[in-house]
Image 1 (cartoon, one colour):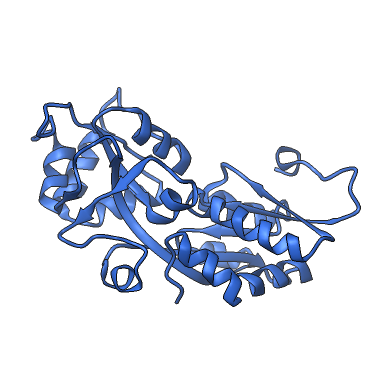
Image 2 (cartoon, rainbow, N blue to C red; image 1 turned 180 degrees about the vertical axis):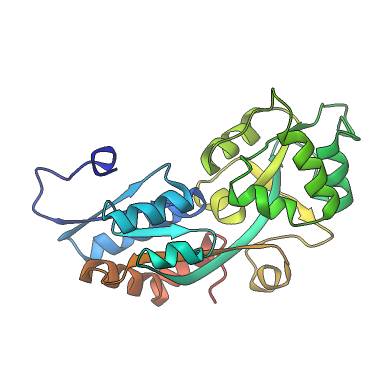
Length: 259
């Protein structure tokens, strides 16, 4: 893993490596840019493609200094010597391209779409489901919304020709690119990456940047920082910055609700 992530060279600045869930990476880059502008002796690198589980493993292995995850750690991960702290949550949403005219959906609608009982949208465009791997956080969160959705997704996953969008960025790319597509993502990813995606109102509740909407929208991803048992001074300083008024403003403007 250390070879995969690489080592810094040719710089005297201390380097802090952050990796984990794709939901949070762009927001981490925005926070890092503001933080390093105030701390010129520190360089922050975000490592893509690890996911929550990979980020935790990388922290434990010492390959990165700080992981961001969209799920709590398991008991076995805690035993490895990692420590988690929730820093925010963000609406878990179903999204379509901004070219689509769809603006709202219900759980019953979603079950019909995933089960293939509704094969096209009102304008005749075929429905394309952007499916995440069974082990992914988004896949499990989608299944947890209703027994009908869980059954429909299990049926889709069992098809031999099914294709999965492997990570959060792949899923967002597919949602933007494939006409008629719908799938899960987060408000934080859509806003921080300036994606051409529309988060749908779900069961009559619309996610938005207003505090009241973020608080009343019932479907959220909880986001965590994961460190080793003895985080470096740089890690502690960065986490303190995220929790500062400046850091919280960046989080809020990118679809986060601070606990």
